[in-house]
Amino acid sequence: MLKAYQCTDEDLYAAENAEQAAKLCEEQSGEPCDEGYPRELDDEELDKPQPAFDEDERRIPGEYTSVREMLDQQTEPGWLACSWW
Image (cartoon, rainbow, N blue to C red):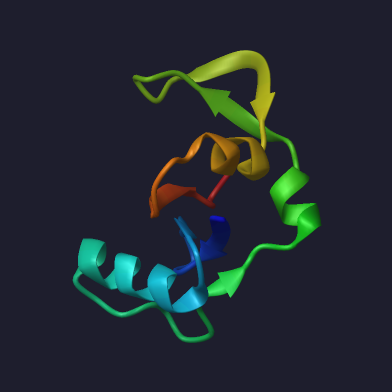
């Protein structure tokens, strides 16, 4: 089962555990996770409404999603989202 991990001040990864999240982050960015990361998101963070964006990264007015919804759609470990919303 995939969980959501924050690996930098901005990036979230879907992974089975913190070690896998750290490895994915380092493979993608070329640098290790920031100090204090990765950390698993809690229920409040997973369910917090977030603005929805289309495939061109344009905000969809009036539509929202959540990290939990994005995580449910993720089929493999990997980058999930930016957390700078």
